Length: 194
Image 1: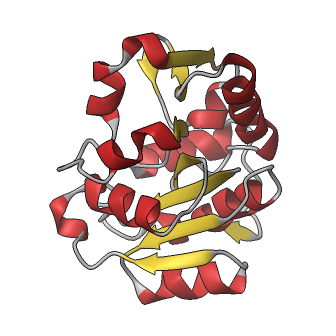
Image 2 (image 1 turned 60 degrees about the vertical axis):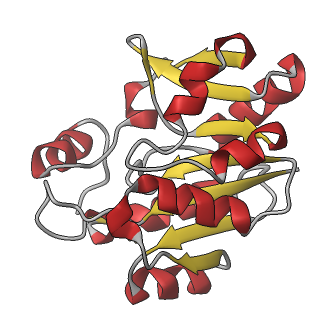
């Protein structure tokens, strides 16, 4: 049983406005991520966010919203809140700004975890680890102790023998929206018409 933890507490500094509320067709960026997670084999979906509008979106889409009052301390705060809200055997951390993630790709990561028995499953694109990243419950205490902006990446670096990397064939699956140029790129590369 794997829970999905959607990290949605960022400040969108490079965008200049809340990127998670940008429209992509009939849904916002964050709604696309939530809907993909809900359509997957994930058990419970937890949305860790820092504003009321996202809390309401989470509730309306049937996920468990968790308010992050310490978002200024970095992504690690969202990681810890998500893990604390879960009682699962593992945690799949999703970036709320990857609107073209699919339920099929999420399920592939879960299947790799079950097939290999590895405690960390991570997509890799051009030799760079991307999100979403799955951690087994054996890393629960480590995840509850992370600090700063890097979330669980130090856990990944410290456990190379327990990682299964999944090559990403379609860049759009893991493309994130940090700037208006990113948003335009997504729209130009198969995004829906606004």
